[in-house]
Amino acid sequence: MSKKAKESSQNTHPNKIGIKEGLGYMLGDAGNLFVLTYVSSFLKVFYTDVLKIAPKKVANLFLFTRLWDAINDPLWGAVVAKRKPDKNGKYRSYLKWIAIPLAASQLLCFMNIRSFTEKDWIILAFAYVTYIAFGMLYTGMNVPFGSLASVITDDPDGRTLLSTFRTIGGGIGGAAPLLLAPYIIYTKVEDGNGGTYNVANANGMFIFAVAMAVCAVIFYFACYGTTKERVPSAAEPNVDFKKTYGAMFKSRPFIVLAVTGILISGQLQFASLNQYLYKNYFCNTSLSVLGTIAQYLPMAIMIPFVPKLVKRYGKKELSGFGAFFSAAAAIATFVVKPRPDQSWLFILFLFVIGFGYSFVSITNWAVVADVIDYQEYKTGIKGESAIYAVYTFCRKLGQTAADYGGLTLLAKVGYDVNVMANAGYVKGVSEGILTVCTVIPAITYTLIFILYKFAYPLTKEKLEPVYAYVRKSNELK
View 1: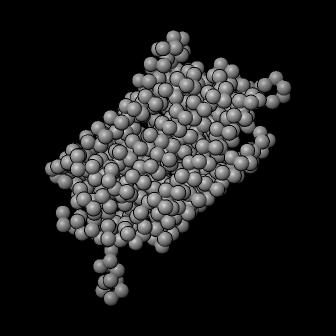
View 2: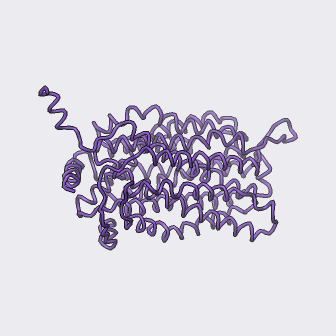
View 3: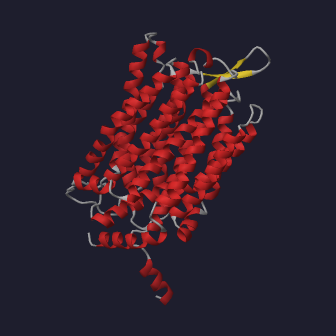
């Protein structure tokens, strides 16, 4: 063996992974996003325009379900943490156990219960039960799936690879409903003046839910079959949750991660309000497709470059850089306020926002893994499922704030389900929707930039001893 080859062999991480593992993990997040994006982006439209539930009541529904998540998410974290690993590892089995129940719960969310009864209290109760069931099952899938990344490999480059491929998977799963659903779930209606507008179609929404459920199940089982847990988990889990959670909330990296998680997830969820903007301001729901392209195309362009940039500059540094662009473009959108005939300008602003956000999105899950490793480095406690459960809850808090706040603001600007569900542009109300859909992103992206730039402490240099500690610790197991 040559000297160069010998050095290369010595420097190869024992848990190094390749494209195959990245692709396998990618499939799992695509499965996640098939169901989550469709629910997150279109369920509120289904509730208001098909089931005719007032926006304020829908906002209260989302708020209540998130209060339940304060119990549900840590509970799932405890269940997953205490489970003993078997021949398949500690986390992979959840992919096959929960796939079908989760897909079925998503279908029930889009069942048109109003076709069976006109009693509003039954309709609202059905919405509560089905949405809570979906949230519980999604957490039961997402906590072990997220924790899986930390045991597929402990190689920093491998973690970046997994985060990159998870972003690709999220892009595939997230883009599919946003690109395809508008052509299936809306019906075009003549406005009597030579123009058209779109209304939600109950049958189309359910049919598309079936398609997303089937795709999710297929991808979950494919992820199960193509991933492997290389980093050993404790044969007899002995988790001290008091110490784990106590250390977690004293950790500055975790606190910043949690807050950015609230903001990032909140903004992604808030963007679903753009469906009302396309429908009742620009009067063209096909803009949802262009909006999705503007969001995901910059990410697709940057994916080949980000791993190399991370290796050179670091995750914190790149995230702060990207968040700056998103904040600037979001502020510009609010200030300019594109007219109804300037939809192209709105989409252009979304593209610039998407370019900046791509740096945050592609590195986000690697940042989560870094925080988990940092926690072990500082405390000696490996609590990936507990940390991931709390982080998942924080992301749900962001979604709650976005849904509750967005729907409350929607009601305040005059969105009446009995009028707007079957209308296009309505003067005054439509302008109010535009203001709501531009001012909140301007605030949110600015806060994300400030946190990554000035508050998150794990620079590239500070992570080097963390990686060395974790690698040595795993070699001793």
